[in-house]
Amino acid sequence: MNLKELGNRLEIDEEECREFLALFKKTALAELTNLTQALKAQEVSSVERIAHSIKGAAALLGLNEIHESAKRAERMAQMNRLDEIEADLQIIRDRIAKIEEVLERRS
Image 1 (cartoon, helix red, strand yellow):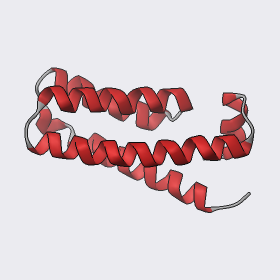
Image 2 (cartoon, rainbow, N blue to C red):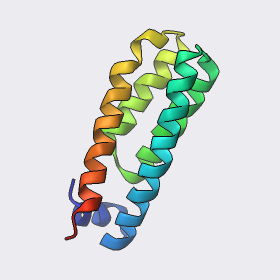
Image 3 (cartoon, rainbow, N blue to C red):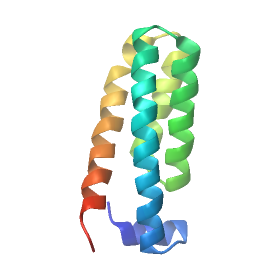
Image 4 (spheres, helix red, strand yellow):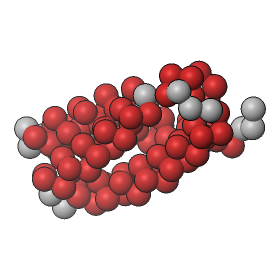
């Protein structure tokens, strides 16, 4: 992930991009914790709602892999197939870890 390229796509400067990604990371990690708890409790509507929230935030920032994984998780929840969501959650976790690496680097 290149902050300058992402910033250009979003029409914001690199520092604003960094701030948006930091906020996304913080929020998404909290949402993932909630989603994992909802998944364990088999709370289908909560899983769907949280996945939808992550999907929307990722789409706004152009984070396509996270968006697509959250979209699949949302769809699986809509079909009550919660057992098929974990792989997508791991992709989201991995992409958030990459965001964290990018944020730790200074350009």
